[in-house]
Image 1 (cartoon, rainbow over the protein chains, first blue to last red):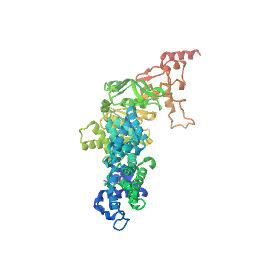
Image 2 (cartoon, rainbow over the protein chains, first blue to last red):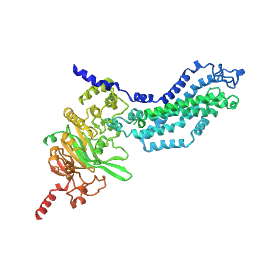
Image 3 (cartoon, rainbow over the protein chains, first blue to last red):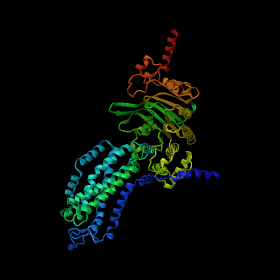
Image 4 (cartoon, one colour):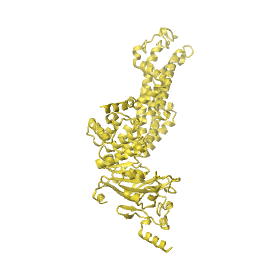
Length: 297
Length: 342
């Protein structure tokens, strides 16, 4: 049976390289050290968000008025705030709040934005007209102003801040996926899919959508960073998380009064926001390099 | 010729007209064409770019991008049913099942995100939703072996980018044949391939035509491809059929000056020539010539009449048609007389 052996030999190097597009993407992502650092930071905060309650030295509301505004020490690494609460513990708990807002607002806007964008891009004509004009109108407002308006209607709470952030991001994703769909729908494999008798819904969601996802993944990662900042901004303005939720932006706002005599109350929440946003941005850049075919060639 | 008449007419195109509505006006890319494809035969459609051959194939598939394109007249009869009048929903059931199509670019005709197995399986389940995934995969392997793909089982797990162009084109052919279509439309299936692979793919299509009795409508700009594969040829020019003839006749006795020019343009390997022949000028924009023969401006035999009247398709023999006044016997006679006089 020398014949079979030959075939195997020929096939061996070929099979080794068998990898789906996602694995290929990970391979090129791995080469970018800076974005690996970004991904590390993101993973670190995700870890904090997941196990925060078990590793935080204190609960979020454990007050000790005798220990108000203490400077960082071995007992309280990041110092204490004006209620004598441990800032480190509140930041660890806050990771969950910020990431939750970041992830879910972005997922919500991706789902709604992609759906609208893909329909606008695929069907074109008046459908595209209506959806695109709505996006244009939404983009005409400064995003934070629009978010404030939405929260003003819904009432200030963390959940409504999340919804507001999701809404202001919808047109960004919608337009992004619409433009991608416009090019993907002209691809020959889409015509080929039609030629074997596939129906519209299947072509849209099983073929066009996956092939339009890469810019969404990149933009999504970057948008999480923006969403975290926007949530912090809304928290800072008193329109997002309400006391005593340990939201980083809210902590910044509360600490404003003590900026001169207890700067740590402001520095550490600020640092936490900065680091998370930096992590997501670095990771997003790396993903863009890894997944965007234009950068590859 | 006798043989053709005995066979069943599978696909009949009657007065098909496909128009593109653009900002520059209406462009009749395919203008009133008639032809038939009989059971089990291979018919070639030849023409330069812009002659309307691809638009013809897309019209049959009901895949004309709309807007701006639209079938504005005529009938496409598949087994006697006019599929040009079908709704998109009805067409979905026809595509892939009764008429299948393979495309020019095998490199881009497969979805890069899914494995070959997934795509073949999906194509089967569209038309046979009751099949289990296992049955569908078994059928996929069976058809892959039929189109000569080695290691079919292993290939199922491969992604399109791991295959060569020739293999991808075989996968495309396999996908087109999954549901045993009656007619297979091949739009320049070998243009993007190496010459050696080209010959293999053409041989494969001939074999499959022979074995499965699938009628093939082969669209190409390459007369060599036609000579190798087809039984009958339709030559298109500027949206019209200018000549239709059995394969032997078209090379031996091309009637239309355009066909003659095309044949002369094929480089002959046996002789070294300093200048290759080419037909002067370019294909006119469809719809730009309202009256007269569309080839007149490039034709070496052009007469006054050619720019004043539109030539019909003359019978130039059994199974042979030519859209040229030269075919008009009277005209020929007059010429002969004039020739004798002078």
